[in-house]
Each structure stands twice: as structure tokens, then as C-alpha cells.
Image (cartoon, rainbow, N blue to C red):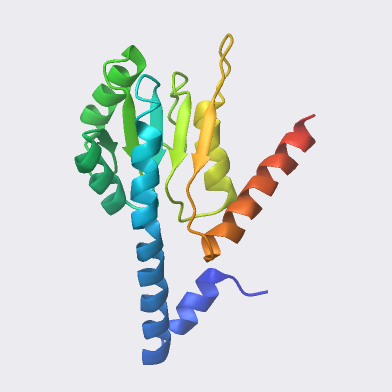
Length: 176
């Protein structure tokens, strides 16, 4: 069975294939941060302003748009290692309450103090989602965590979100 890499390698060989890939990328970009997601994000940030929040996006552009609109710290590959470490330390101390990231926080970063996550968009699949949710589920005495995933109705995001949640349930069942 051919995978996505095989498909894209074949598609870029023709003008029609390149146009199709460009249209797919444009569709993903449009879904990344719709007007409804902007409004919902604003309505979720307010009641949780005293919590330590992680906002996950599909791309760096969306992360920076959210950072500017809500005056929160972005953590992207465009932010130097020293500045990222400083921001994570400030988050752990509580002087920074919200971080927004496209992929930097997906793996290998321990943020046990986070108790709310808002997934505005994801470009990858189940593994990325498990990694993101795992940022919040670090063990701590009496810890409760909330994860919100924003998807646009009547789009491919709905079925993708369902598959990711089913993957979480399957992983959890396998651990028990």
C-alpha cells in the first residue's frame, strides 16, 4: 500500500498534481485558524486565565497570530533555545501562564504544571495528539487536566479528531 510520501512524490511530477497539493495545503491553512476557532479560543482563554495553559496549533504562523492577539508566549522553532528554556522556566514558576506552540512542545519537553490544553489544530495524526495530551497528563498530587480540541464542523477535521480520540482510548485500554 502506498503512503502519503509516495503520493506526493508522484503528484509533484505533473502540473495538475502540484496544483492539487497546493490546493490541499491551502485547505489545511484555511482550517488551521478559522473565525469560529478564533472566537472559541478567546472564550476558552478567559475562564482559564488563572490556569497554566498550553495552546497547540498546526503551524507556526497560527502560533504567532495567537501570541500577538492574546499576548502569550510563542514557543516555535524560530525561538532560540535559550529563550525557549527561559519561557519554560517562567511557565513552571507561574510568571508566564500560557504558551502557544506548533510542534516544539510535542515531544521531549516536560511541562508538568500545565493543567489546560487547547488544541487549535494539528497537522499530523494520532501520535502527535498523544504527545500533546501527554504534556498535561504528567502525574501530580490531585492533578486534574482539561483538554479542548477545536475542530471545524463539516470538515475533514471532525473525522480526524474522532480517529485521534479513538487512538487515545485504545492506548489507554492497552495500558490497563
